[in-house]
Length: 66
Image (cartoon, rainbow, N blue to C red; front, side):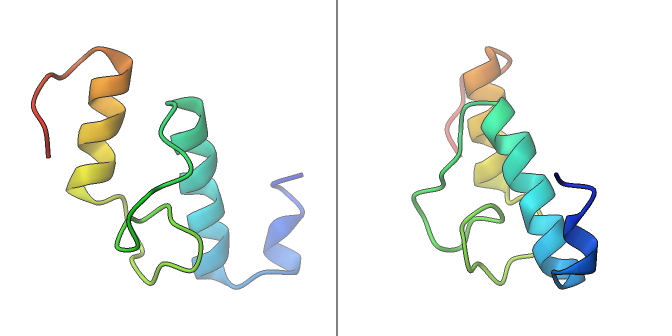
């Protein structure tokens, strides 16, 4: 269904939805902090360092905290 989204959503919302899909596959969605690039309603239009650190940790590639 993601291919249908551009016709009914703003470009920023489509990018956030795509980040949320990626985050879901990495086991870190939903986000618990508002400044996350994957949080619903967030104005951050990118993955944050905390988002990336959480994905690395969940994938077994990182042990440091953000």
